[in-house]
Image (cartoon, rainbow, N blue to C red):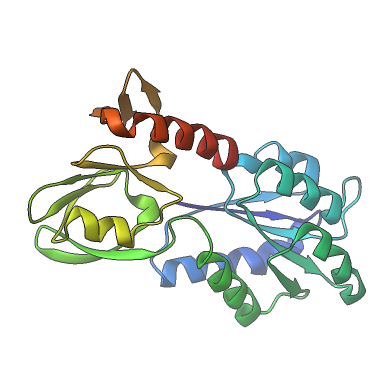
Length: 232
């Protein structure tokens, strides 16, 4: 599920922005959780879980630039879309590597373009075709919890469904985002976002215990630590 936040001290100004974001996600079949914060300090308390931030530059207290610096430090994978009425302040946003800029009052096409660009970079936003009850679905990689592979097909498990995909393990590895997914065994691929725990060569994910092969343990343990620091 995509986690998006809006940070603006004037809530009334965000009404149209919330509408455009929800409309875009609905039209593109994207599950969304949308949050609205009125100051940078409040946003930073929840920043670890965010994928995209619409961040106002002009805010009292911790302004958008200072908030952006903290976002880069605490959640470097998060994409920042800066919002402002003051075009001259956009230069400052280069210091926090803002991914896109939008201007107030918000225009729907500008918001859509910014979201489309971000989603191409957000972990697991790419989609894959697979079957559930013989009906073809287009599922984002982020929704996948783990994959069990067999000789000629794979079971793809999401939060509450099992999908079937007629691809080999090698083909799946090529398609999947290698920042997000790790092959722990000749039969299993896991989404690092949903690994609940790891101990003694066993991964716990959605109530399932999956073994990590001996030859992959050292690499997995290092990858798990690095992913936990960077993206959780």
